[in-house]
View 1 (tube, one colour):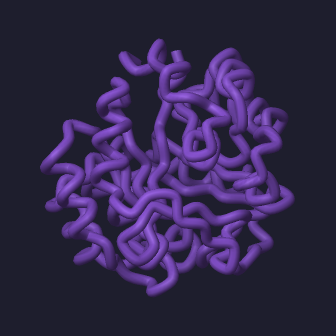
View 2: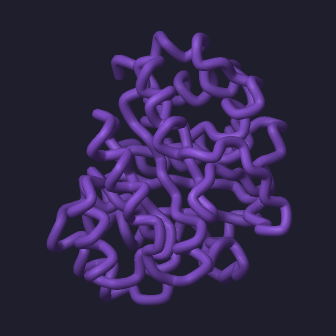
Amino acid sequence: MIRIIPAIDIIGGQCVRLTQGDFQTKKVYHADPLEMAKEYEGYGITHLHLVDLDGAKAGHLVNWKILEDICKQTSLSVDFGGGLQSDEDLRTAFSCGAKQITGGSIAVKNKDKFLSWIEEFGGEKIILGADTQLEKIAISGWQTITDIHIFDFLDEFTQKGIQYVISTDISKDGLLQGTSLELYQRIRERYPKLNLIASGGVASMQDVSDLDEMGAYGVIIGKALYENKIKLEDIRKYHTV
């Protein structure tokens, strides 16, 4: 059964959502990420995707205190991303309680550094962020679209020990119009042992069921929860995964 993973994106200490990664579309949904995390935990949620958007913009970890507070005051298993570019950032994130970290841009910009993290911490602790626009890898907060095809990207890092990947189709993100089922199906068929976490565009329980049926390991849900397109009551059956 698929793992439901709510997303909390942070700007200025608040829970926000962007549309297609555009900071100009920022909408604040909750003033306190810790309270939001506690609410998710109260509905049986066990995992959380926490993104430091301030960090992503700055190129280094910013909101470490929020990460620490959530990890100390809830039992949620947190994967953390956003601006992690240095060994110091990584060690800070883990020392604050993150169970996993997600790196995307650094896997392109500083491949050797990213590979050293996989070697030191293991493929189960380091999640590869493979965000795409027209199947080309996007980096730097989705501001830069590379010439790297997602399958070439995944080919390389699965061979280096990556076990988890979060893939967001930017064209779908924040629009609440459904997710990229065809792309995810192709990823599943090509990399059957990879733990695929789908993200972007999830708008209904049907999207969740479709991803579950194809064998996705997890699904990240953000805006759909904030706007009650998917209700927390509806995902209770998944919380024991």
